[in-house]
Length: 105
Image 1 (cartoon, rainbow, N blue to C red):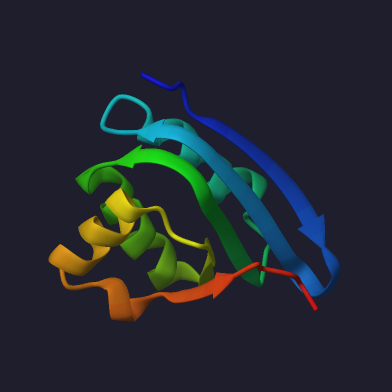
Image 2 (image 1 turned 120 degrees about the vertical axis):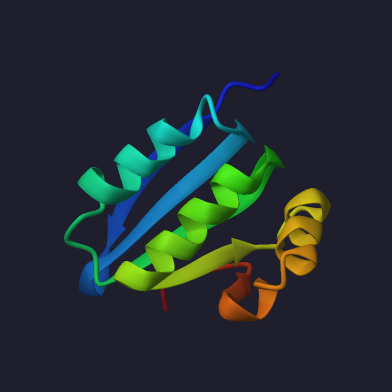
């Protein structure tokens, strides 16, 4: 298992970018949730860079949906194949804006 890693950076105009790497499941999703809810609490736009997500389960999916309800959310991609399939199969892919090669400009 690849332990989850998150780095946070703040950009202009209230943008917070959280770079996610590793595997996210029921045992590890709490770390990402804490970062998104506490470290990025004041962000107008939350960008989750998911390029390095090696595995995501329904807990990750649930967190994405909850975050989308609280603020503007963008997924920076390309979205890895496994995560893309999860979003597609669950019928929520169209709920998320995906920006490949994200830049804040």
